[in-house]
Length: 259
Image 1 (cartoon, helix red, strand yellow):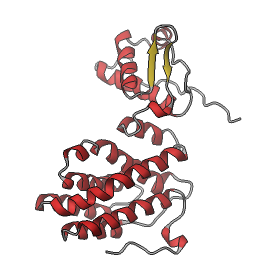
Image 2 (cartoon, rainbow, N blue to C red):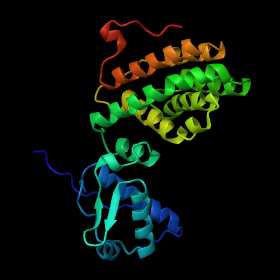
Image 3 (cartoon, rainbow, N blue to C red):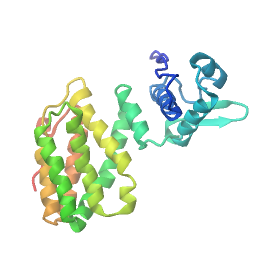
Image 4 (cartoon, rainbow, N blue to C red):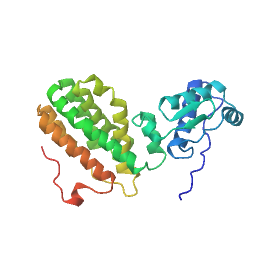
């Protein structure tokens, strides 16, 4: 049986003037304890009075932080049992904070990484097809800016991961579908953190820059080829999943992405 993780000390400035920042810090701390299993499913979080006595924060700040996590489906409060952690099936797993806590607190579980890629595989290829049909000249400028940054930024730096995420954000924007666009924050967070994991945080990070594959997708969007854009976007997401497992298309002898 694996050893249960230990509680990470609370790190925030109780004298900070902004109560909002204190709320965010507490929510961050609680979220990280939950995703790492310090507070497991069905277990209580620290009691309000105990936490207040230890940290010196206000009751309102702690309650607001708890409400934030309850809003993400991570906590539930009942009269007799108090506030307890829910199972991950109840979490808003595409919430940008949940994505961030999961990746910044160590390697996420395999099921979560695969679930994020499966979600991307369902959404991004059709979105790329819509983008090819509906993109404007203004949309194309977003792609070009992202590709330029991907070519000239170091893949270990946040600037490269942000550029990659910007490319995928441009696909959602160019789809001109308001429902797809409402998923932008979550999908962008998923792209940014899974990319950072592949190229920086794995035990053996990858060094191959996939900018040419992204450029191939862009070329088909620019050419208004929806079926081609859908196909290459599917292959791009599938390749990224292989990369996250420590295997590339080159290792498997599979064809690389071509328009």
